[in-house]
Image 1: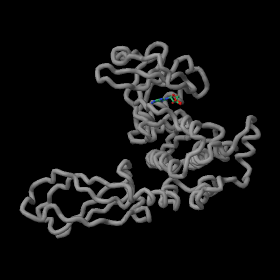
Image 2: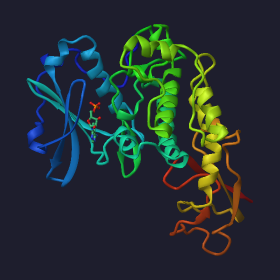
Image 3: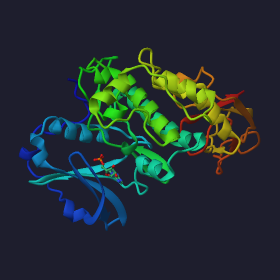
Amino acid sequence: MYQYPFYTLSPQPSTVAPQKKLLKDQYEVLQIELGSGTYGKVKLALNHKINKKFAIKIISKSYMKQIFATQHILNELNYLQGCKHKNIVEYIEHFEDRDNIYIVLEYCEQGTLDELIKIKQKLTEEKAFHYFYQIAQAILYLHEKDIIHRDIKADNILLQNNNVKVCDFNWSIFLPNGGKAKPCVCGTTEYMPPEVITKQKHDKGVDIWSLGILLYYMLHGELLFRSKHKEELYEKICNKQQIKFNEKLSNECILLFQQMLAHQKRINIQQVLNSDWVIKMLKCKQNQNQLELTPIKCRSTAQESTRVSIVSDSSRFSNSKFTAKSLYTESPYKSKNQNQEIQHPMKVRSSALDQNNPAFRVEKRYFY
Ligand code: AMP
């Protein structure tokens, strides 16, 4: 099995010498429980020095004896530490003592997407897209790093300021060079694709299937495949049955479902982000939003006009329809102050995406 190469923890954390830093020196762990996972509780903690709240995952070392537990806990530490993305929960630091491992995470005060869906029952396409797009951005980031999450589900999507933070990397795996994972039943049954249930080798397509199941859940308020009996659930997932959709769903959305929940030839995350539904939903947003451009450094020879292209953050998109049109603005360096840096950001109308989303970069080109 590949080990993601950025960080290693002793395979037996119980034998690791205690770290000098102590949790209690920096954090006051409050008796407020934020939730509980397979390996322990998550509690709210306060860092008095900076007067900020954090979430602390407390993992009991007694779990280490359980099958997969050590690997899962190492995965959680490895992937959390190696991933820096605005839609992935931020790892702060970790501690351990004789009994527990403590992982300090940024605090996501709005709970999970699962809790939100249970309250709202179902979301509109616009609302669902808001979350879907951010989760897809997190998956794109992971897949570009050859990491497969393998447990994308509403319970693992935390919310902070209405933005998404993917968490729980217990089942994640690093598979470089288009590699496939050995057959194993991993993740959460309702979200598992047929190839996992039938114990075949699997790849990044696992996350696409789960994302499709999650989108269905957001739009319908109930999971696509449900049963109290595991065998029946397996059967429902593996049989290619006709999917019943909410009658109000757009054709583009239904088409995307069919492509994400395909048993063979499932689309990849780039294709998800280039799908007609995503493009349509992005266009719906475009008129309301503005992009703020950072000051442009002066180039002494730059004259006349500066072309500002707003293009996708990922070069893979730049030739596709995901690329937005260019905008032309008056050059700020036209006159005398050529060596002076612009102090105020220019505002241009975004033809692409909302300013909350850094999926777009701004290219500045100079004409001489
Ligand atoms: P996990 O062990 O990662 O599955 O987390 C278990 C539960 O704890 C989640 O479903 C959330 O309800 C809660 N939780 C985990 N991490 C955080 C966090 N960073 N901020 C707020 N709540 C969290």
